[in-house]
Picture 1: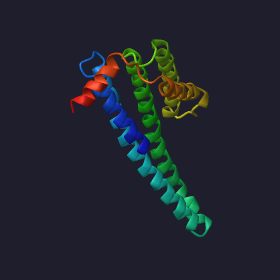
Picture 2: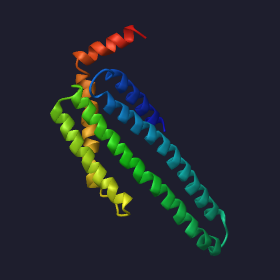
Picture 3: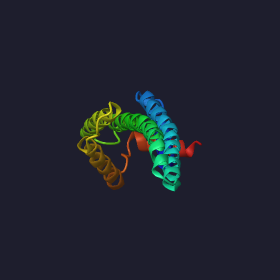
Picture 4: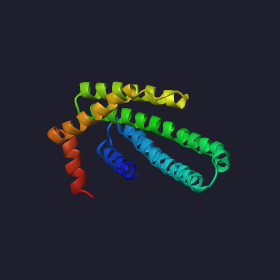
Length: 177
């Protein structure tokens, strides 16, 4: 939940940085995806708590009959968790795709970097969609986005944001609260 709250704050900042720019509607869509992700985080956490409660009850119960009776309940709770988890990860992939489009269109990162990010996001979306369809998720589909996210973090730490229009907008927003 904490990472979703941080991402939500970052999305709000990005909306502020793109006001009066043609990509503002993309930033609002990104903010909406982050709000949806935050809500799905809460649902996933609640299903995790249910799964833990069922597991503890089965572990404390004496005899094999209780374990057999609890199996359908465990399967139901697990299916509930997966029914939330995979759409949650899909929305996360869509929000990552929007992030790379926005960063490249605003000139915060090179367009080639943005294009590589979009391709990595599409790979992640395909991988997660297999989970939505009930198949095993192939980690190879998720790895490109992991690598691109790490590269983006290093890029922004080393290079920062360009001083051009975006830097001027940030200074203007800071001086006029």
